[in-house]
Length: 385
Ligand SMILES: Cc1cc2nc3c(=O)[nH]c(=O)nc-3n(C[C@H](O)[C@H](O)[C@H](O)COP(=O)(O)OP(=O)(O)OC[C@H]3O[C@@H](n4cnc5c(N)ncnc54)[C@H](O)[C@@H]3O)c2cc1C
Image (tube, rainbow, N blue to C red; front, top):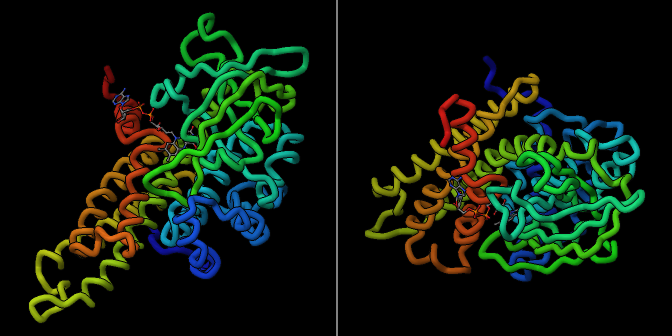
């Protein structure tokens, strides 16, 4: 058993940390205030090989291992969870993973390679107003018309949806009434500018630097070349996409938690009450210690899952476990971080409140913690009602 990062991992970590602090850091305040994602980061990161790091070198990616991806996600989230979500979780992860895993060579050249360069930005549209956790109750339909599909329906809470060039969209290609539940779903790439496709920006309480949208499809004509893989295999493709994404939540939570710990550590040593730094009061000391322990466990669980993925082992249970543990532990950690700040923690001019707001999203998206618990129960062989 080896718990040390390799020399290459350490070099990569230092590089991405430096990039995040110097190139992303200065953009955070404005992006959070305006709610506009700094799109210039996509080509910049693409040039440096920071988009889709695990995808094959053939398409311009780094062909790196999963541990490298987790390091990247943690470092980006330390600086800004919203921007990290836009460039890594959504674009490099959800948006193009199914194209990489199931797409044709032509689709990889047309969608994956430009996305890795940061020339085309990706999103992933699964959730609908009446189909969230129960995603297979979706109503969006794609009906064959000659060599095209005609798509009608709507999607909600779609990250990067306002500006994405390619939207990996889940829809029924068969009449859901005529197939078994969950069968007949396909993933189709809808492209920005296609007539009938519109996006409306939504306003959130956190992660403001990553734009979120409601999407509408009204008779959107999409060529059949944009169907990913085999028609009707969408559910398998969605589950595979979400499985890898859940692991990344460990890295996202670790990044946010480490950032909160660093802020609180400094604040608690500088703030003086009763003639002493507040870090020296046992109630605060213990909170700081508990935060450090949580960060350590989150990171270890994340690396374990990534290692399993790199060994080609099945990591479904571990990915769900890290998502539940890390995203829930993070909520308490953020409350402690706020408490140590006293009244200042509640003021918008102190950075800790942003981290607290951003953290909440982690136990909602890509399967709520409740749904992840159900998935773990199934993996454990527990009879689920
Ligand atoms: C900021 C943000 C970004 C997002 N980005 C994307 C994106 O890019 N693409 C995308 O497709 N979606 C995206 N989503 C949607 C997200 O995945 C859903 O919000 C999530 O899956 C939950 O669905 P819902 O909101 O409809 O909640 P519901 O499914 O209505 O659930 C409500 C509550 O009931 C619980 N619940 C539901 N069913 C069960 C059950 N069987 N057992 C126990 N508890 C249950 C849930 O856990 C939750 O607590 C995003 C959401 C947010 C907030």
